[in-house]
Length: 60
Length: 157
Image (cartoon, rainbow over all chains, first blue to last red; front, side, top):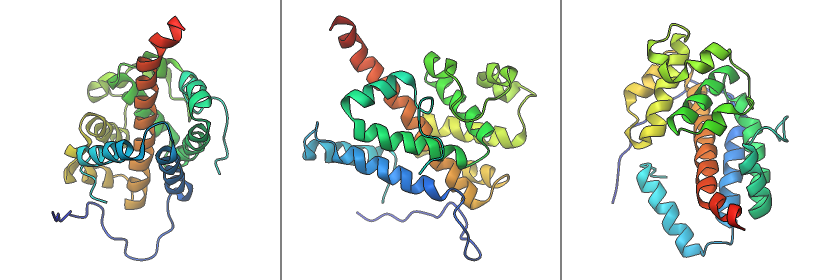
């Protein structure tokens, strides 16, 4: 299935510094740590991840 | 690394449960909650945190000390009725309206919701705000979820 998502934020005119440079990395580290938890088996974890993505219309 | 890492960034019961069950997650979520307050005016983010708590009927989250920046008590008390209150600026209103849509139905966020934020913030600030909102929303849902699932078992243990 393909899906075209419209860009909701305008492209910056030029190079811009991130507003909160540590925040994106911190979110990534948090998500990585959650996925690495071993209390739930990997298949169930992936099913939950996909279900959340669909619920949030996250296509990445 | 966050400047502020330690007690107060997370809800106390969530902090304690993560320390017991998932200390590796506690460390990174604590760091995340140190970072998020740098994303935007912390007073605006605090208003959004309080609005999420009122939407979730999370009295503990509402009552705990502000992890970012405190807001005036009269504004905190008026948070659920912000549309009809003169206490809130247009900037705060845009953020609170977006917060309500995000918490209630994130998939239903429209271009109009984003454009309302862009009237007050740069695209980079909007991106940072939405990221901070995600972290605040997840924190409260996680705290409520674990409290609901684990508290009855803890009481009988």
